[in-house]
Length: 118
Length: 115
Image (tube, rainbow over all chains, first blue to last red; front, side, top):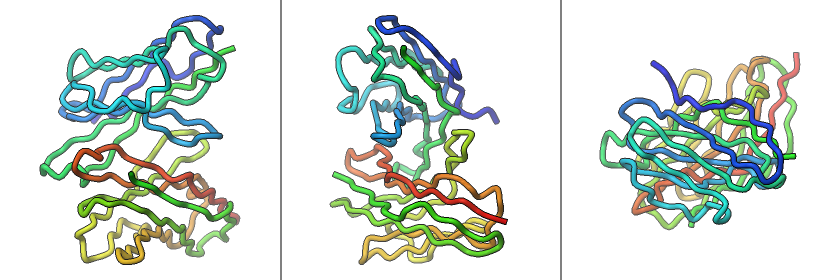
């Protein structure tokens, strides 16, 4: 089975440019998460969706960040304009709530997008 | 709010030895799940093992076992018979209920297995 697919794997861009990260969750999964990982701050949740609806975006750093999930098989995380402090690894993850007890379900992660903003 | 604490410094482990990674957590949820993930130097996040808050038995998955002590709010990972491929960063994480559906992570434990 295909896992969570993220693209691109690496992105290098200049400050001020728009960056779009893409994610395809595992088919049938109903939760989708965007995380950011840095050495200083570890793994931070940015936003998560349930059935394509944003549930909690309190981790989105500021208005420069936006995320969408237009359908069950695709999500984007956009940074506009990008800044050097946005340099990080961005992970997308998905999970399936089979039992109604969502806390039982592990998240399955994509391989991440390493973003470098110069 | 959920809080996960992993405070051990980096660890060196002899190949074939067992290693225990400590994790304590804090939550007000009655129902929650505890997870361990492995992140090798290649960067991917690999799910290892899960323990539910109402599970009476400690979870096991191959060479991984979880020492769950609910009253102490600890969920330590035990890796038996360490292999060179176990060298990685290990993250403890929690997923709650009642709107706390995010997976909250600790800072991680670095493990290096030496031959």
